Length: 258
Length: 140
Image (cartoon, rainbow over all chains, first blue to last red; front, side, top):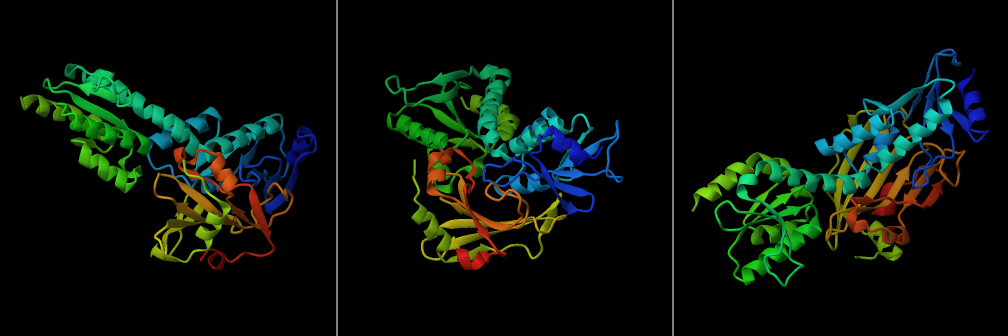
């Protein structure tokens, strides 16, 4: 059977096709991105133009999803790549040289097309996943590391150094040498500003402490906020990976100071 | 949280800009797309922008050129304009491939908590162009 006829039947006629190139049909289906552009979905036809069971036809985006994503988001960190790969795996989509595709048989063409469109939509919205998933991953991973690897430095979570100031919280307190070491997890500019304000207020109150900031991604902070935090905070780690690599030796040196 | 107006977007689009980081001489081929970027700055008051250029390696008619504004006081950016080629249908013209322009509206941007997002996309205001529009004249 002709895959286009199969789809028309399965889509209850709400599908049209346009030949994009010989052997490549662009599907005109009511599947849109949020900006109103129709999703770029193509059928790569078998050479003979028909599919017989158990042959398959490829549903592909010909690289246009990654192109759209790249307008505002690049998959340029291991975390982003991990989330991207997870979306592909969860939706049974393959990626090769920037092209996303799935193989469908005659029976599964409609369902596979819808599944593919869902994957395309999720990938185009990857930056929102980043905001939610990566933020929680960052703090989770930081907590896991502190609890597993820094036990000897007596970590305590959610500390309020000034009793009547519950607006000035410290994410973690460590005690390498008896002097409290306040650790701030900096995942965004708001947290950076709060850490700055907190450190300055603690200094104003003449509290005895040291402070460290662990950044999720230092490069994402506006320069002025980074400057203010640098001036207020005693030590910074530019990323969680750097903190994981250097924390123990740093804290040992702190412990040896006494 | 900062709120924008359509007049502000129009001003940012029209304001004279200079190139502070020019694009590469050649588009870079990554996967199945060719891409290039450049950084811009408004001449008078130092607003920051970047311009992205993308084209499908397989389908030359699938291209995008976008102007993105970086407000600066918070991380994130706003896609003010995006010029698209005849890539396929869109909601108001599902069956026609036509040149078209996406622009951001203040309502769309303000409706979402953009300061928490990496970038905002120009969405629902789509202007159809009968021919390939001239990006530079419009935006600078």
